[in-house]
Image 1 (cartoon, each protein chain N blue to C red):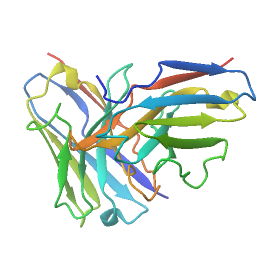
Image 2 (cartoon, rainbow over the protein chains, first blue to last red):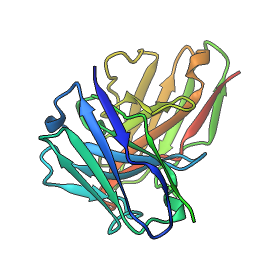
Image 3 (cartoon, each protein chain N blue to C red):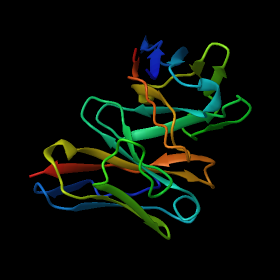
Image 4 (cartoon, rainbow over the protein chains, first blue to last red):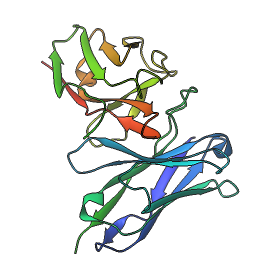
Amino acid sequence: QVQLVESGGGVVQPGKSLRLSCAASGFTFSAYDIHWVRQAPGKGLEWLAVISYDGRIEYYADSVKGRFTISRDNSKNALYLQMNSLKPEDTAVYYCATGLDDYGDDYWGQGALVTVSS
Amino acid sequence: QSVLTQPPSASGTPGQRVTISCSGSRSNIGSNHVYWYQQLPGTAPKLLIYSNDRRPSGVPDRFSGSKSGTSASLAIGGLRSEDEADYYCASWDDSLNGFVFGTGTKVTVL
């Protein structure tokens, strides 16, 4: 069945870096644009970044531009989010997801919790 | 602060129809498609509506979406207890060159 599984979350100090991974299975990963979306505790959804199906185009939210980098390896069916210069306000559950397109194929991971704290 | 504004809450009794609004601008809803998500407590969001008014397979036809100008709406007909959740709209924003989510609406079934 379709699965997106995030990993790499944890507790990190402010100013440090962390890399999240998202492993995909059960669908043609290389055919889809993929997004990172986060949700701070008790807050709403925040879109962070998207990478095109072929990895050539990336877009970022202003809140993470210049600090976070989205990438993918279609040979491994994997998506990544490199997070640098982390701030306490980056504390959230991070989801990888398809969707936000004209196809209606909606796949989400279970989320990875990132806590930025000293 | 989001550029897509939703009412913080909405409610209805079982069987009623509830409508949630999403107010944006020309750079987002006015120019691009709208998506609607349902998020049950402790779970990942689920797509209810894409491309303004289309339902993914498996989504009941009790859920419907519409768009007019710079606003969009999600209607839930025949409200059920399992519809109690948070609902979010989303759209691409040409000025921000990114997607934006709405502020979210908590639906309560009385």
